[in-house]
Length: 345
Ligand SMILES: [Zn+2]
Ligand SMILES: [Zn+2]
Image: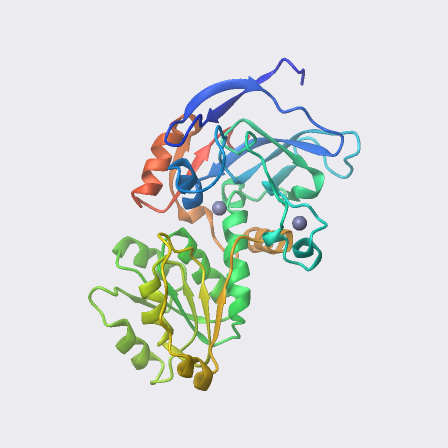
């Protein structure tokens, strides 16, 4: 690959604007791996950033849910072959801060975000330590969802589910449908709640024991009925609404665990009764982003088929139609939107 080669890049000059540009392919440093992008999925965070609702700098190339193949390696890189399938972690953690040193690199104090190096482009370039090799034969469309599944897995691990416990998943977008599958993988029986029929059908197909339309069914009464008045052992709240925290925490059984998975914007407050937390021994958790360890385990769940991610794709669009993809996610149409950059080949 010569330095005069160019690549397609979906360039965001400022919030709300995206256009196709041809730019030079990233230079590959000695410790770097150049990845030819096969697929790059759209995350609601990408849409928030594109809409100017986050603090990230522009101009920018977005895209952090990526799978592809090794295209070139720096001279210090060992153990990776050209053409090998990989999923890059698109945030470079510093490796030395207190967060990184205590197993919480998802909260790294000095992370590097690749402002011009996002996944909505033919190539991305990251250090070798950010590369997660994918087992050959695994769908790259499925593997492109390693990052969101890693975030879900992090939240689910905080719920510490054991077999036969009952978990409630509120909100059945792509994230909720992944929570459902991870809870099932931990042996839990799952109540899945969402007002959209298509999402409930998907949840049922993916192993939910009960599905509920909270607009027509009193969720609290339903929980009481199916748990013999005990409550649910765990709740994953994937909907960003403070009111939902207040309403759903009451559905927990004694010893129940709660994960506030979604960020809540605009910012809001919750009112909780501390006596309820005290006497019921509830554990209220939050989780945000993911570590390389979460990513490694998430990829294992995809590779083993324990979590099906490809089935969550409702729209597969060519790279150039990124603006359409952003609009679909913004309007909550379908489920997961994935950009086909270079495809499986
Ligand atoms: Zn994401
Ligand atoms: Zn760090």
